[in-house]
Amino acid sequence: MIEELIKKIAQCLDEDNIPYMIIGGQAVLLYGTPRLTRDIDITLGIDTDKFLLIEEICRKLGLKILPEVPEDFARETKVLPAEEVELRIRVDFIFSFTPYEAQAINRTTKVIMDDYPVKFASCEDVIVHKMIAGRAIDAEDVKNILIKNKNSIALEYIRKWLSEFSRIPEHQGILEKFNSLL
Image (cartoon, rainbow, N blue to C red; front, side, top):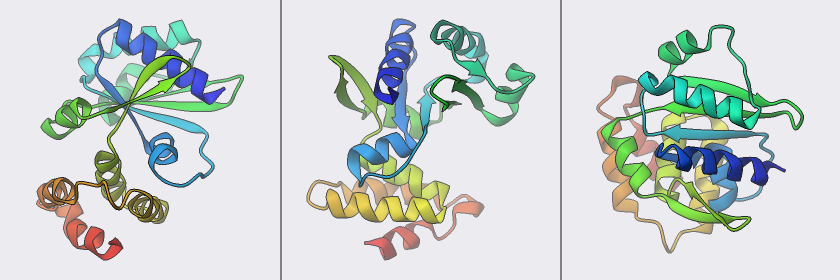
């Protein structure tokens, strides 16, 4: 059910040549330990000037767009929340075109879902995203990912980006927090 929806979304994004990567709980399921998650978070390698493309994809997929004034909401928050009503699965389309996100999208891991390659954020980029989010569940996810993938994680890459993000006032100390989870 959720895998089928992820595959359909990936196909639509690929058809329209929209760069993307699956992040959040779905990526944690790939690299970490099983946990309950009923949403799909997708980082798009585009800005909100391409909003109409994503709105059309939602329409094609039968997703209900949640905000009352979706374009304004997306421009303000850089997120377009939608829902697959029948399955009650939320889908967040996250608009981003930062240098970090662009290179993270280029580092995706292709996961075959029902004979279709779906692009997931790399293990390292899931950790970076989780560290930036900074909630208790995110720290737990990072610990589990580190344990499961301890022999294959590029720690230098993670430290490089967390060091970059630590220059932003609200993310000061993020590298130290990561090192404490190791």
